[in-house]
Image (cartoon, rainbow, N blue to C red; front, side, top):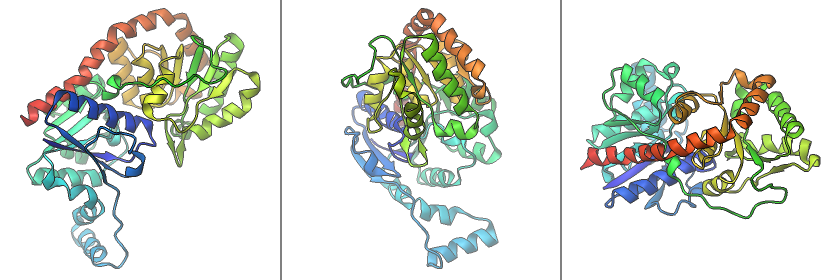
Length: 386
């Protein structure tokens, strides 16, 4: 059985890397005959994922102005409002493999949280027109993200695997009967423990991840996070390890975190992890932290899955849904409007400190169940294709 993962733009986002890496591992572990291929927008960034059977160029093709394809595309859009020809050409690098594959896995996770995706819709339509299996793998989608066009696309899928309960219930409420509940595959991902950097306090280091994505959505959040750093330095003796998890041009955690590092490095208690580590290496550091504060979902999954009490600077349904499935409530998840409130950040941190042991015990109880839910995705996939 040949499986093609698509809707992946490269592994400079270590969360995307974590999805590909962990999904490949659990599929190959449970489906012995599976060959797993990845169509990547930037295949050169994925070479570190060695268990894949192939990494293919899934980047967009450019339709040159005044070319034959440009004229056909323009005429179809102008006179028939038909974008299918143009998107077929743009995504040719993904579409051309359909005949060679048995299953297409759309793996973006939260791709459907960011408006309409007509390019993905066209790929989905063509996969099904060839009679191949189509699976939306480990997704999160908010009620506010839904549209009639998106719902029609979702109906095409043979299987939709929702990675948390909020998304699962919402999709079921829309009348979709092809939805199953699982958990994010990254809960199962291995870790690699590198040497601890200078300044790290064993058993007394708190990780802090912050992202341009959150900052751009709430411009005042950067000031509140600075206030939180001061609060941690003033009220505890912990080291703060600034932890990037996406290192991509225009969306680079390291650039934002390094400004904090420059501001606070003279305290002797603020360090920054390098920007060249892979997903399992970042997880290796996060696993040895006492607490973690994170904006990137897969950085927080790395913490949760190692029983590290975690405070989430959330901005979408995925953060809320994952926390609810772990704790039975949206525990220590601050919404996008809340994270500019310095008092709320400080209070949430103090709550995490006060409930440290209870949080760790709850994670020790719930994580094994969540990992089993991660493996359910492979069971559902296997049932679909056998």
